[in-house]
Length: 87
View (cartoon, rainbow, N blue to C red):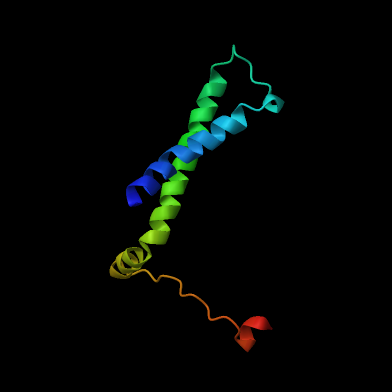
């Protein structure tokens, strides 16, 4: 199950951006190869961001322990509904 999720995260940003970049409103020129590079830069950045977000969410406890061992403080979650937070 996890393997399917990881493969989806790897290919979904590229698929989404391919659909976005194929829209006629962007008016792609077939003679401009530099725009192809823009596509791949966007794909790589969004894929790395997707994996980074996934790793940050799923490995939260290990990140806290790593920061704690490095002497850094991890921000604590605030309790909801406190009066001093609402003022």
